[in-house]
Length: 230
Image (cartoon, rainbow, N blue to C red):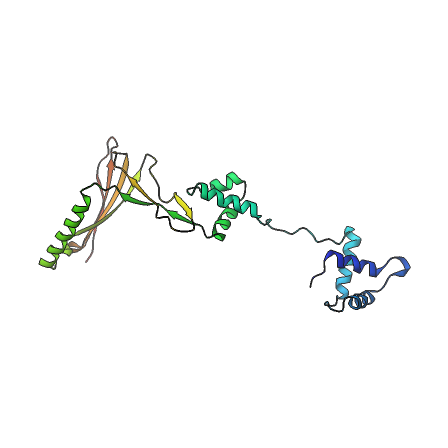
């Protein structure tokens, strides 16, 4: 068990002053006699305590290094910030509460808050549901009639870059302990944007990559690359 400040003062009193000073060995024996249920102190410990008192004038512990612990009030403030505004960022909470970003992240992690991304979904019209059913039936019929039908389908994907501050899923989060299934419908109001499109056709072993510019003066479609294999 480490010595506290009271124990160190007691050892100093055992050492004594002037011509009534005890040796380190005598101090160790006396301390053990007074505290038989505790671990005996060593002569080096007595020497360090005496030297520290002579150099510093006290035997208190030195201030601990490193960052101070976050108190309960600060933790509650961080959690309240997320409850009041689930879309807040770590940087924003750090700035508002004047604490480090790493501290905010650690608090969120401690209370098991996770930054969920928004899931963008297409705005559906009233008749879109019937169209989806019809498309599924169409695909199933053609696949039953022609086993090579799937090989002639062009599979594609695209990424859209908006120039008007549209929602960026990489920078938008929802802090919560459970997944809120956050969705946001987006409308096609002819914003300025750039699409990068890629398609793969199995029957030709060909991939096409196309850049399309929307609603920008002088914008045009550019075929970026075309590659084949096999």
